[in-house]
Amino acid sequence: MAVRDEKQYWDEALETQPRARWEEMKLALLKAHLRHAYLNSPYYRNSFDQAGVHPDQLHALDDLRRFPFIDKRILRDRQLAVPPFGDLVAVPERDIVYISASSGSTGVPTASPFTAGDFDDWMDYEARQFWSSGLRPEDRYCHSLNFSLFVGGPCVLGAQKLGALSIHAGTVPSERLLAIIRQFQATAIWTTPSYAWYLGETAEKEGIDIRRDLNIRRIFVAGEPGGSIPETRRRIEALWGASVYDYYGLSDIFGACAGMCEEKDGLHWAEDHILVEVLDPESGIPVAEGERGEMVLTTLRKTARPMIRFRTGDIVSFASGPCRCGRTSQRLMGVHGRLDDMLIIKGVNLFPSDVEAIARQDHDLTGEYKLVVTREAQLDALTVELERSHAYQGGNEALAQRFQRQLKSVSGVSARVSILPPGALPRATHKARRIEDRRGGVWS
Figure 1 (tube, rainbow, N blue to C red):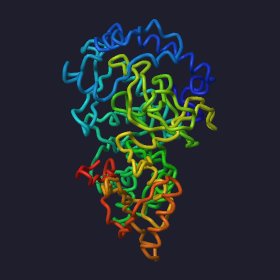
Figure 2 (figure 1 turned 180 degrees about the vertical axis):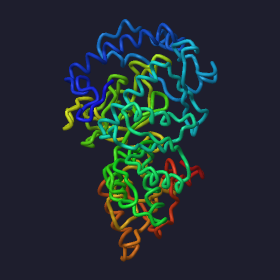
Figure 3 (figure 1 turned 120 degrees about the vertical axis):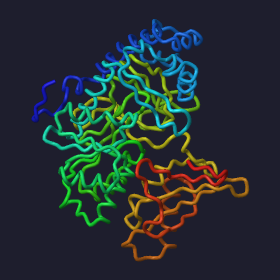
Figure 4 (figure 1 turned 90 degrees about the vertical axis):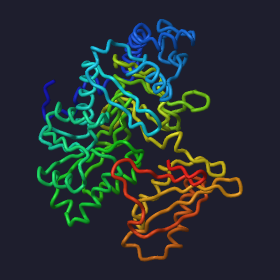
C-alpha cells in the first residue's frame, strides 16, 4: 500500500465508513468464519454440535450469543490433550508460519498460531493503528518489548510497514535502552506504562535531561490497565514531555487489537478482524454503552486458530459513536481491571485501576502504590501503601487522610492508608504487581 505523509488515514474508506457498513461487514465475515471453524476444527465441530448450534443458523450478529464460550482453561486443556497447538486449529500445520505464546503466569503457556495470511493481516492492522497515533515514515521507532515468543514482539514490523525507521531493541537493561534511545535519537518507543515511568525515573537518576538530551515524542504503552487511565498517561507525559497512546492486545488473537488515535478518546477496535461483546459476567447479557462488563472476543479472519467467543476476563466499557478524528470504529473506553484482580472489600467491588486514578492525580504522591489485603474478624480489610513525593513538605497523616476521603468518595471503599518515603515501593521493569494478598500469603 502506498503511503503519503499528507494522508490522515491509512485506509480512509474503511476507517470512516458508516456504522451500518461496519455491522454488515462483521456479519458477512462472521458467517464465513464460523463455517471455517466448524468444517476444519475438530473442537469447534464437537462444541457446536453439543450446544445444538450450526453456522448456518447465524442470520444476525446477536445470534452469536447462542454459541458457546471458550476461555483460557479450555485453550490450555486442549493444547495438552492434542499437542502442540490443540484441536481448535483449523489449518494443516504446514500452513502455520509463526507462533506466539502467553507468559504462562497462570498455568501452562498457550501457543497462538498464524498462517502467512494471518500474519500479513496483523501487520497491516498494526501499521494502520500506528498511523492513527501519528507515527510517520520520518519517525525513528524504538521497539522495547520482549521478542521471545511474546505477541508484542513482531509489532515492530507494523512500524516498518508504515515506513518508520525501526530499532529492534527488545528488553535490554534500562541503561542500555536509554543509550540506544539517545544514540539514535528515537522519536517513539513502545513499552508498558510501568516501565515507561521507571525508564523516565532512571534517566533522571543518571542525570539525563529527558527533554534536552532525548528526542522521544510518542510513547506507545500496553500490557497494563494504566495506559487507559488519564491520570497515569498525564504523569508519564509530564515526565517525558511526550504524548502517550494506550494499546490493547491479546496473545491468543494478535498483538494490538485496539489503540488510541491522536484524539485519545478511547481505543479504536480492529472491527474488521475482531467482533467485541461486552457482557455482564454473571448473566452473559450485553451491558449498555458506557457500563462495565467482561469483554468477549471473536476473531473474524484468523484462519489458523479461530477464537469464537473467547472470555478475556478483562472488565471494560465501550462507546460506538464516531470519534473526533473521523474514524467510526467501536472504541474501548477503558480496561478497568480483570475479574481475577477485582477485590471485594466489605461488599464493595474495587479494581487496582480505581486506586491508580486517584494516586496519579495527586502530585504530593509519586504515583506508585500497592494494595495489601488482610482478613480481620472474618472480613477482608484493605491497606493502600503510597509514597509521598520528594517535594511534599506536609505530614504523612494529613496526606493519608486526604487519600482516604478521596478513595471513599470515588469508590465507596474504606481503607487504611500508609504513606512511605519516596522510592520505598519496588519499581516494575515490565508488568507491575499491585496486590499483595496476605489472607493466604499469595501475590497477585
